[in-house]
Image (cartoon, rainbow, N blue to C red):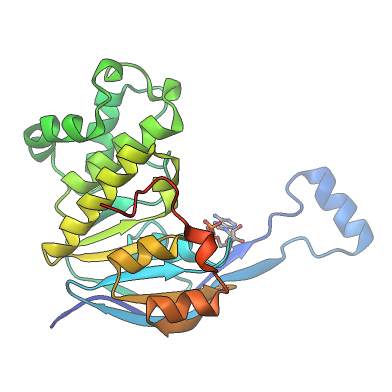
Amino acid sequence: MAQSVVVDQVSKKFSLHNARTLKQRFVAARKGVAINESFMAIDDVSFDVQEGQSIGLMGLNGSGKSTMLRLINGVLRPDSGEVLVRGRVAGLIEISAGFQKQLSGRENIYLNAALNGMSEAETKGKFDEILDFAQIDKFLDTPVQHYSSGMKARLGFAVAIAADSDVFIIDEVLAVGDPPFKKKCMKRIHEIRSEGRTVLFVSHNTNQVRKLCDRAIVLERGRLVFDGSVDEAAKRLHYDADDDLDPDGSADF
Ligand SMILES: Nc1ncnc2c1ncn2[C@@H]1O[C@H](COP(=O)(O)OP(=O)(O)OP(=O)(O)O)[C@@H](O)[C@H]1O
């Protein structure tokens, strides 16, 4: 089977931004505090994903999961190392990313679709399908700034799944959807997986990761510390069974 995603010795450094204003810089300099302190958000990470595989990216808050997805979808470039992806990447990493809040839902569908690699004609052809999934019809011409976070997640997810990507990436954004919508999304992700497309799924919910993924990768302070079964990954993270009781039943798709 061919490789779908290759992450080869990738590192990404961020600045802590702890002295942003001139005054803060002046005070920091007087105190002898480092101004441009930085840290490794991703630190020499290597892994590869075969076509059709579903990988769960797990790790505590701030461990680098979203940053890793942004490096894979090309929003960020690595400082060193290389990320190779076969085909089109689409998905949803952050609810508001890619939305222009002054524009309507309708206009944002085109904008978001373009960011997911879709042409205008392709978006037009899939417009009804997107609306049908998002179910925000009444608010289609309302500026997105007046949308609830759940409505933005609906729209973002509906566009992302319409993109027919080879690699589908999805972050914890489903957390804001209501239970019926979450269930619908999980069902759709499962279908994407059954179609033989590659899925990269970020979640703290072991139940959901177990249902969707063949394999899990654990990041810890930017470093890859585990690559193997979902159950072993959860154990490594000390995620208890109680942590993912999944009270809304979204895992039962
Ligand atoms: N653009 C940025 N500039 C500076 N620091 C950043 C930037 N983006 C992310 N970070 C930092 O990088 C670290 C990793 O962030 P990331 O969002 O990848 O974590 P995560 O594992 O997805 O966390 P969570 O589970 O909370 O979503 C965090 O400390 C975060 O504050």
